[in-house]
Image (cartoon, rainbow, N blue to C red):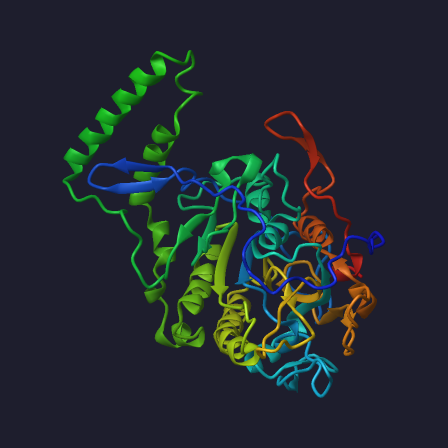
Length: 456
C-alpha cells in the first residue's frame, strides 16, 4: 500500500527564475571512429529487452493479470506543462485562466480544450492529477522524474529506461534505449554504466549519420583489422584476459559493423510509412519522433524517449501552452491509435508528463511559475487501469504561506510512481543492488499505488 505523504519540506511556491540551483554532472559521450567516418557513442549499440508475453485487453477497465509489457515510450514535456491548460482544467474559477473544459471519451471526465484529439482517447488512459514533488528547479526536477530519486552529489541514479534495459536481454542490432530530440538532460545509465545511456537522435526526417562507409568494403575491413591489432597490443600490455577485458573502442567497433549491415535500421526510416499515417502525427519533429517510436518498439527497442520542450511559460502562459498542446495533441493521438491498430498498446507503456506543473496563480506577466504540488501525468497501455482518474486538485487559490498539499487529494509522490511503473514491468523495485562503490541501494524508494493497477 502507498505510504503516507510527508507534508514537511514541501515547497509552497517556487521562485519564477529558471536558472539551475547547481550544475549537475553532464553526460559525456565517447565517440569512436570506424573507417571513413562511422562515429559511435559508447553504449550506442546494446541489447534490448527480452520478450515478455502480454495478453489482449479483456475489458475497457482492466487488463489481464500476470502479463508484463515489453517496452516504454516516454513523452517528455520539458519545462513544466500546465495541468490547468492540459489534463486538469478548472474553468470559470479564480485559478482557471483562459482554458475551457471539453468532454472526453471517458464519461464524467473533462480535460482542457487545447487537447481535442487526446480527449477521444481518455477511456484508454490512466490519469494521475495529484503528482507531488519536492523539486521545483528544472534540472533537479527532471532528474527526479526520470530516475525516481532526488539528486545526490555522491551518486548518479539510472533513469527508468536504463533500469528496464538492465533487467532484460535481447540480441537486436539497434540501440535498446533511445532519446529523440533530446535536450541537455536526456536519460542516463547512471551507476549502471554508460552502456545504458540513451542514444540521442535528432529529427527522424534526417538520415542517421555515419552509418555508411565512404570506402570500398575491402578497405573498410582492412582498417577495422588494423584497429583490432592496435587494440590487441594495447590490451596485451595491460590485461591478462584479452577477451573479457575489451575496451569501449573495440566494443563500439564490433557493434558498429553489425549495425551497418542490419536491416533493423529501417525502423528509423519513417518515410516507409504511408502519407496518411505520417500526417496523422502532425508535421513536426515531435510528431515524427512519436511515429519513429512505434516503429522502434515493433523491432524490440525497450525504451524510447521523445522530448517536446518549450513549456516554461512564465509569460503569456495560455498562448504558449496552447501552442505546445497543438503539437502534443496530434502526436499523442497518432501514437496511441497506431499502437492500438498494431496490437502493441497492451505490451507498451506510454507515459506523458514533465518535471512539474504551473502555479494556480497567474503572475503579473500573464504567466504561471513552477509548481511541484498537484501536477498531472498520464499513462496509456501496459498493465495499468484504463479509463481511471486518480487524485484531485482544488479549484481554490492556496493562500500564501499555507501548505500546498492541503489542495491535493490522494497525492502520488514521484518515487511512488516509479515503484508502480517498475512493478508493472515485473521488476522487484525494493530489491537492493550494489553500486560500483559497494553501496547497497534499492531500485526505488517508493511504494506501489495499487489503485493504478488493472487488477483493482
